Image 1: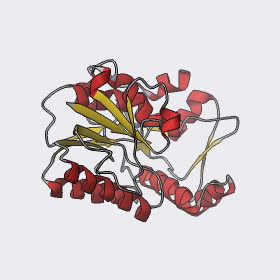
Image 2: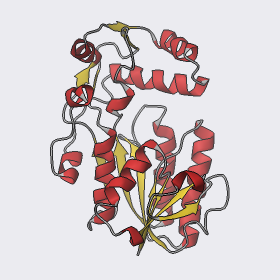
Image 3: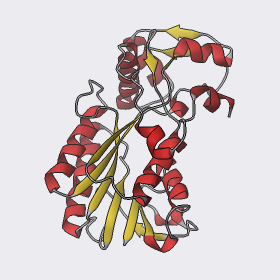
Image 4: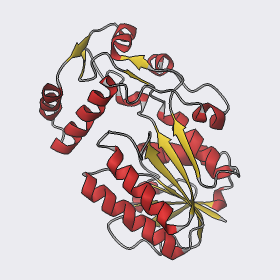
Length: 266
């Protein structure tokens, strides 16, 4: 029985593989990456997998596929995801684990559109699935240098989560039974505000409008679609969209998820 992890050289995929290797024999694991040279030394079978091209051979003989969502503008991401889902069905994959986003089917986040479309495509295949609806990463919000924290989130709160905790949860799902057609909402242990984060790191929180935030992010050199997506997330944080704490992550990993305070200290 082969379990294949896509995007295994990325930030999340590499952590999932690291945890999976502590829970499954290496000869039962495989990875697919766009550039196999970057995967040398991982200790598992490496397959070439380009989501813009044919993937049926890449997924051949795979029982469980962990589909890590890719980056890019919405139209490109959806096309790549649907290509992967079709290839999984053609290759006879028996179970798909997909890294989605919080409340993908109902969320007002622009980010959710890609994940809703992908979840619907997976359901339509009739293949059993597990949707890992990941919250926002702590790492996205930790200050990278001096100066104020600037957001369009106002006084909103967010139940963010450590990337490594999400990776561990994915590895648990890959290595234990009983996750068929399950949907897990994976959040942190509590919701925090950016004022609290600013106090924690000894700075201030500058609250700006969505338009000002988009302009500022573009000024850092981010592509337009990324700047707009990040600002949209922050505005929705201000509306309380990502504040709910769910128990699923703690149940999967068997401990309290890493807090924003712990992530900041590290």
